[in-house]
Length: 407
Image (cartoon, rainbow, N blue to C red; front, side):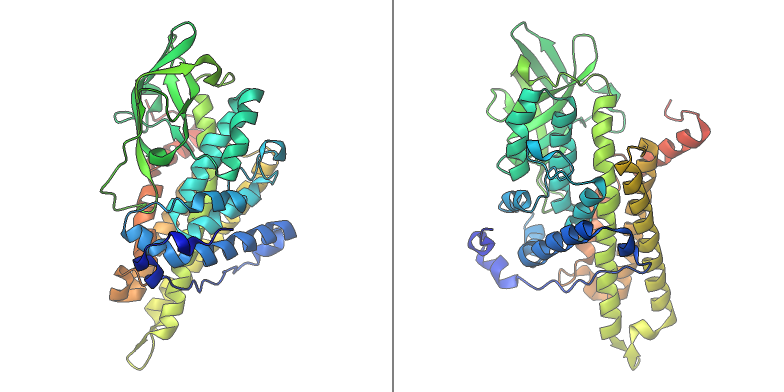
């Protein structure tokens, strides 16, 4: 593994700090995990503590994406962990994938987003909807982090309603002509390729692989974000881009294809949000035992204990929800509606825990001496992307009533 201090600015090196996080398992959920699950968790956590936690605050403050971490994430198996080893994946189960996402987001949602997009929204659709040639050409390089990918679905005027997309691919005989634009795309500014969803001549949504360097393909970066500041966000703009016929994902057809990918990403978020919640709780608990007011630690006051007790209760419930969902996913039984429930619930409790943790930290909670405000700001994006909080509620509502509230 490379020595990342060689790539850091003097400011970041000066401010590098230790990560004192301790894992919290109130209901002994570790008993439900295999030894392999726990080994994977410890491996990723060790990498996070050594390589990422010491620098993440400064990268977030500077709104810079730590690009040097991409290949390292490939080295630790964070990309395509639940895809077959023959294509460069880890060959692991879905609980392992969730655990990896939890450990990455325990550090930062932006770091988890990079891995989540690469795994669930780029590698997964190529594996599921691509040809054998596409799998062997792209997946190994994406798995190692040699290439970074992005996922183009959301448009400036079509977020929660992707079916209304206006990006189109026109059959020109020996190639497709791609025109349109995608917005709020993680990894876009540095992506080597993009899995893009567009309507064909029959208004059917299809997936195509667009590679950097194709004439007319640009990826302007989105600036001014108060959230996911250590993550690269941008646009995908297509101006008469000639896409080779062999870059069409042959098994993709209709909106169900990209939505299947989103279900995989949402599953990872359900685990990832627990990591952010645990980090906020861990920091708040430690601070409450160290901060003295009125002659005793503030953890000894009833209102502080109420906050901490509610935090660990919600974390425990979220852990059980994610574990059960992972078990169902391993069995091929998890439904999109079940995934929506877990994503919505776990992100919501993480946001609430971040806000309560900020109060326990008092004024110190707004500084980067602690991770609270960074997590809180990041989660404001997580609660919106991959399906907004309200959209996921409607998915559950439609599932239990059989009535479609989207129309």
